[in-house]
Length: 350
Image 1 (cartoon, helix red, strand yellow):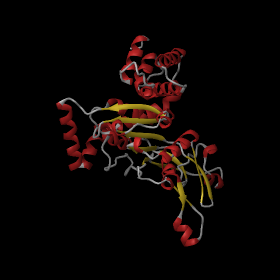
Image 2 (cartoon, rainbow, N blue to C red; image 1 turned 30 degrees about the vertical axis):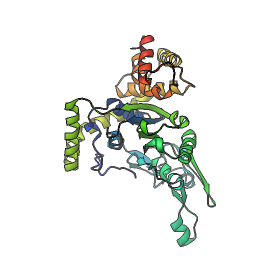
Image 3 (cartoon, one colour; image 1 turned 45 degrees about the horizontal axis):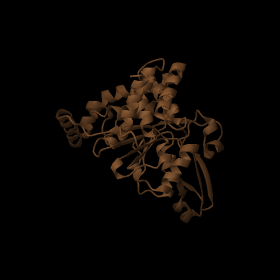
Image 4 (spheres, rainbow, N blue to C red; image 1 turned 90 degrees about the vertical axis):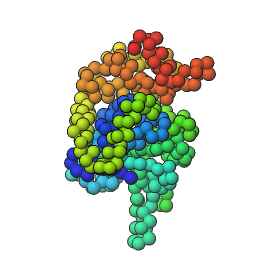
């Protein structure tokens, strides 16, 4: 299902306002960073049930500025990037009129078949007219947007393999039933789940740029405020959404401004050295940790209106960028977040 806006302001009565979510600062921050720079990679949200994980993802749709799509393209091709157009757009020539559409936020249910995810033969056209036509799947619908998987740790292995292939190449290739279709499929993968219900495959875990942990609020006043707001939204979603539209509009403008300035953010050698020293101190495998750390820090600087990535910026995003990349240490029972904070302190970055 694609969650879309119903008017020009982006207000959708079906989704809880993002700005109305109480607490969960790290989760909301990570989602906004990914909205500023999708190349950060996916976002993994693990924690207790009923802590607003899916609510935050769906509320994110309210904050995303509309994107330009080439004509009536079924794959959300960007007319400003002719080298990345699908075959149908290329066949229509170099000039295609663009139109504004909401950035897609697409659900991938655990029960989805591979045909539903990747796309398959359009049976209606095949039976009625004898035509071999392709029916795009969820990957096509999510292109240039967000693909959300609740309980991602319970996803079937064959779908995990499919997502890994597409995430690595940015292209979805379907070859079956006499069809051969290739189309772009670049999206921010957002997964949520409860770690008590099973672990995520290491190959997929490594593809997430950021990882956040959410917990149930412990303060009585905070829990009461969560219940109060949710109850009012359930009784009057339109009225509640209108009350929070100004706050959502501020966040929307902030994301749009960050997108405009992110290309001008300076990355001094001191910030690169800081990221590398931290990854070495934590024993992070490969270089994906540094890249995610750098991209997240750049997006954070843009979001905060800064011009340069500082060591403080790197330290700020380090837990989200690295906690899911740490190897288990049988001699250290401390959690990933504690180990990162300890390493930051030892390196004088806190």
